[in-house]
Image 1 (cartoon, rainbow, N blue to C red):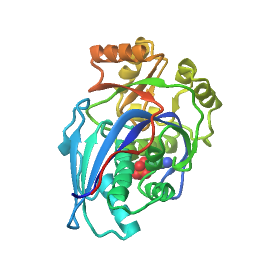
Image 2 (image 1 turned 90 degrees about the vertical axis):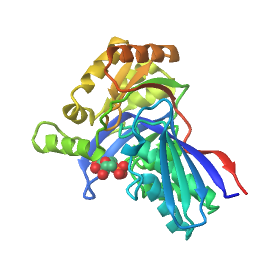
Image 3 (image 1 turned 180 degrees about the vertical axis):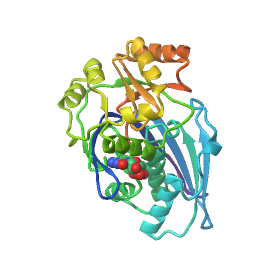
Image 4 (image 1 turned 60 degrees about the vertical axis):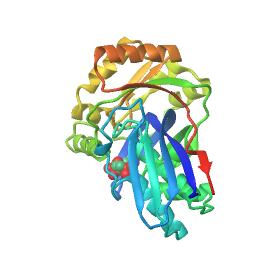
Length: 313
Ligand code: C5P
């Protein structure tokens, strides 16, 4: 029986996303606080006898999207993760990758990055490479700015491109509502709009700095304090590209969300609740207001990429 390994990796919300100047490599200097949430990509890797890397994508029951809208060719981050593992460990065998997506597609919640993190762990295990966690962290950093955090999980401060991580102390669980849109936003397009506004003098860019209020609220496990401390420097750019997101934020606030922001580069809106019951009430209100494509509830922090099944020969 070929070796089959299933790994799941979480999506994220940025509790703070401070965007600094653009660097020479095109990336922006960030100070961000990531929280992993309980929406997961699940990747099952099965070693093949031939050299092919074959990707299949399905949606989890909670998400409605057309799986055909996600590319399965070499541009897919999970395929790139498999190729990177094969190259690093001199593997010539192929692999089947079956992905069940539970994180909104192109939603600002790192769904593609979670695929990459999960695929890297699953391939390393299915091919029996003996890769260490540190080696996987390095490999993930080469795949994209958010990939190391999807491997890491929990709550962490991200510096540099967002990939220089240090854990943040938290207390308890926070309850979130995520309102998705049918049309995604491209992360590079949102950063381009941010740069355009700065170049046009419509916005200013400052040296990013960690917000003590976010860290204190996390330590205290205080959703109200965290809700009022949430900030996202990409939000104005995302709102210019998708103005209707303001309706989602307003609807969440009407339902007494303690905070509501665009998640990462959007277009998903993240609303923070006081409790799990309150999250369900906010979700019901957003659904009734018809401002979102899908409304999901989740909690954070959630663990990073982890093996959930290993069927070995
Ligand atoms: O690393 P990743 O491919 O996930 O990043 C997607 C895009 O987001 C980059 O190509 C870049 O346009 C933008 N980005 C950025 N600065 C960062 C992270 C991402 O400009 N720190």
